[in-house]
Amino acid sequence: MLKKVFLWVGILQLLIIIFTLFMYKKLELLSYINVAFVIGSIFLLISLTLFVIKGRFFDIVFFSFQNIFSRMEDKDRSPLSKLVPQNYSALFIASIVTIIIMLAALLLQTS
Image 1 (spheres, one colour):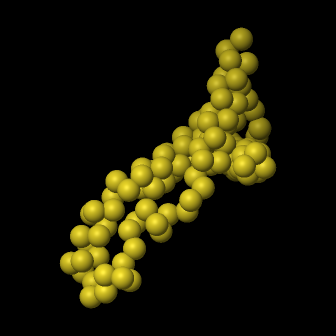
Image 2 (tube, rainbow, N blue to C red; image 1 turned 90 degrees about the vertical axis):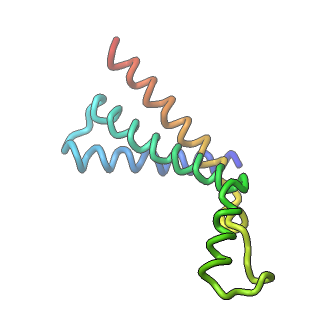
């Protein structure tokens, strides 16, 4: 679990640096903060969406759409929560760590 978190944090930091260089053409603290906020927020939103889907919130709606628009047998149907990947917690923790790093950089910027 810890390896996955470090891997995701590394991937997110690499994405932040790439997008910072691509969008701002230079690597400054303020541009890092801006891009880190956006990327950290996007991945936090993705992990929270996976959490809600995994919590069987949309299973009834998904089952209803399968029932109306499909001629599948009941044994072939699977709920939406079974189709979502199981491990979203590493992504959640990595996005929180990214936002914490961004807040630390923001404190550095303001002081």
